[in-house]
Amino acid sequence: MIERTFVMLKPDAIQRGLTGEIMGRLEARGFKPVAMKFMRIPRELAERHYAEHKGKSFFPSLVEYVTSGPVLCMIWEGENIIMALRGMMGKTNPQDAAPGTIRGDLAQQTGRNLIHGSDSPESARREISLFFNDYELHEHKMSIEPWLFE
Ligand code: IDP
Ligand code: MG
Image 1 (cartoon, rainbow, N blue to C red):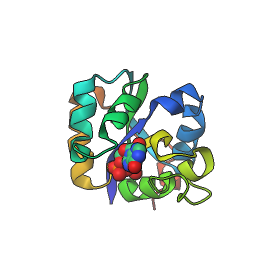
Image 2 (image 1 turned 60 degrees about the horizontal axis):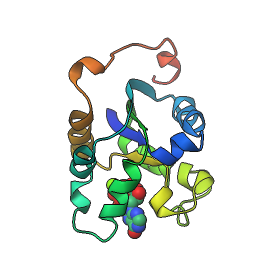
Image 3 (image 1 turned 90 degrees about the vertical axis):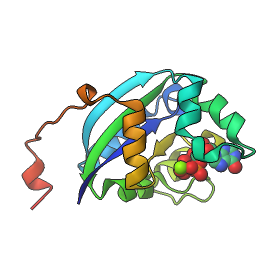
Image 4 (image 1 turned 180 degrees about the vertical axis):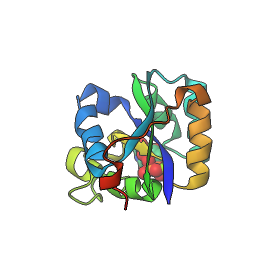
């Protein structure tokens, strides 16, 4: 099923110059960008985005981390993309992330793990509407689609 997911390249991905490397992997998989926004997240938005982790020991440092510099917020579309992207990201702790995954290849610590991706259709819907207005989404056909989808 064709789905959409919310992706955020965190401040370490920007500072380390890894946005092209990471987006290149999504493009190479045949996923399609639908929206992108380079922004510094206000604290309140970071706290709402990560509301499920409120009260946990790492919550303050997590909010500090994702608000420490600009991030690249995006919506990508593709076949089963929510779970497919979670697989491409690798486990939350880069030490447990398999080689070949973004975190497994490019990161070392949980608190500097480069990328966020929605973990379910409900999270994707919630996160997309938290970060984007409808007019910021761009529907477009790509000429390669017949070579990706039969
Ligand atoms: P996910 O990003 O793989 O979905 P979650 O468990 O939802 O992982 O945690 C959200 C983010 O919070 C992680 O990506 C990571 O940046 C941070 N985080 C989670 N657990 C820890 C921890 O134990 N120490 C430091 N940061 C953590
Ligand atoms: Mg999560």
